[in-house]
Amino acid sequence: MNLRANVTFQAGNFARLEAVIVPRIIAAVDQVTELVLGVSQQLVPVDTGELVSSGGRETQWKGTRVTGTVSYSAHHASFVEFGTGIIGSGTYPYELPREGVPYTGSWIYDYKRQNWQGFYARPYLRPALDQSQGSITNFFKF
Image (cartoon, rainbow, N blue to C red; front, top):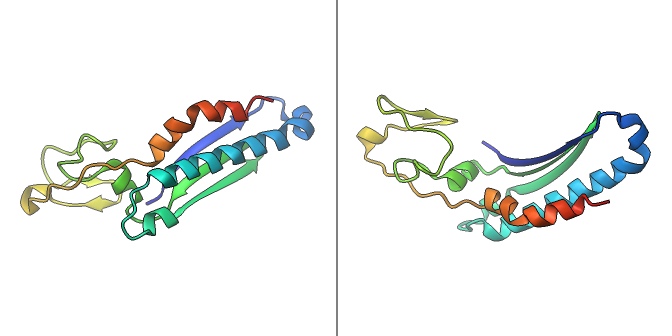
């Protein structure tokens, strides 16, 4: 399961703007992804180094859209970001079912019978985006 943060720009009449604006927008989106990745790698908890080394960034231009993505591909990336189990239930973006065995995203566990409490979230990607917010807008001032 990958965890991603995206930034996107889409223009209405892209043909006239392409020669001048597109290279600047691509450069700005690229700088934003570099900034957010750098900040997130300072915040990511390091145990074995697998999570921090799985971080990466990409900038794509398709049609009229420039998209920058910062992602962590380690299998436990979202578990660290959002927490797990009963302890983490207030920190991830979905509700635990009140009955039955919860299926949440790509994982299943029976917290009622296994007595597994889980662990708290240790967010790194969203806080990196939040901390970078002031600088991000500066990259787009042409």
